[in-house]
Length: 484
Image 1 (cartoon, helix red, strand yellow):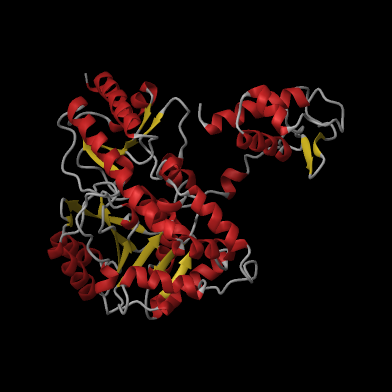
Image 2 (cartoon, helix red, strand yellow; image 1 turned 90 degrees about the vertical axis):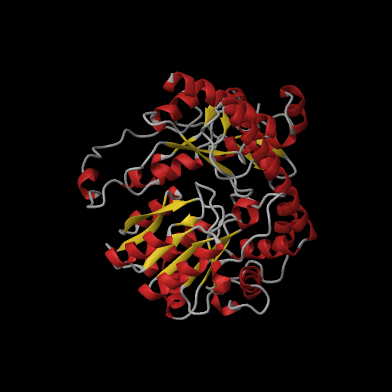
């Protein structure tokens, strides 16, 4: 049983027990609850926090946890009573827009963030499993950050100077084209994408995107009122011959790409095409938004990585996006946008209106994290674990589902599976969930009709290499059900 289900189960037990207590009665000690229910101290603490958030108990430091005043809810409900809602149908008119329901735009993002039941193997999420994250390093960094002088004061709107300088060196190299003043600290990668799309293109304008591409990019583009125009990707990255045609046909002023370990194909932009992308965009008077999301997810057996496009750009064509979230924690919502000239001013204005600034304690904790010698060790460990999980996934796919896997690069966290013509990726995804494995259908990664059915399989979100192999086995059972 995983931690989430243990917490929920213990909270449910305690809720039923505590609701029979008179007001003000003290609950058993944490040690007693641990022994009685055979759970960890963390599980007890989180379950008590759940009851406290519901208003059922109150914690008094040094004294214990006590039953609060009775709820207005019915017996055994564990929730406060609520009045029946009135007529909410008027909201359908008030919320109607030309862009359609926002829940449809966000559906692929919700799917990526969905947490499967405990008995389901997660081969869907874009975040590494909790066991691959540096929780002790993060806890220590957050503790030190909270004690820094001025840690709770308002930060500069662009971000802490020291953190902006670190990102500038990490992206462009020492003495490279990116200066501290070219960096804007953002609320993670998704927040940075949102700022970039709302800043660089006018509502209704076309935006060129790779095809296929990360579904979150398509969601951000559409939510900003923009029109995504697909440009096909092959094993060497975006097809630059078609990129030039797309710029000429649409007069777009923005191209969004992932040159390194592209999501979902895993492609790495070839050396020949790197310069072509910059040349074509510059000739079109357009920006290249470089989403460098996977640079810290390199595998231990990967060759040397190419530099970011931003490190080779001196004309301000590239707006670079980098985030530490995937390699550190989903909760470390800290990233950076780099740009120069009027583009940076536009990005800065959009972000300050939307969010003011990224919370200073998170920025301070990020500085503590990347300065800790343990951060480099964590990245090396993560690289080895990702290599092992990829190897397990590839081996299992060749054994269980030969023919679905094309080429793959040693980096990132996912594989792009080509399904036989006629196989419905949505039906296969549903069958896989019934078989006990969660995977991602390929359809949401296309801005238009997909040329062929695909699945994306993420091996980073599984608990172990053995669980990756088990997930592939369950996928085979679902494939046999759907495809015969």
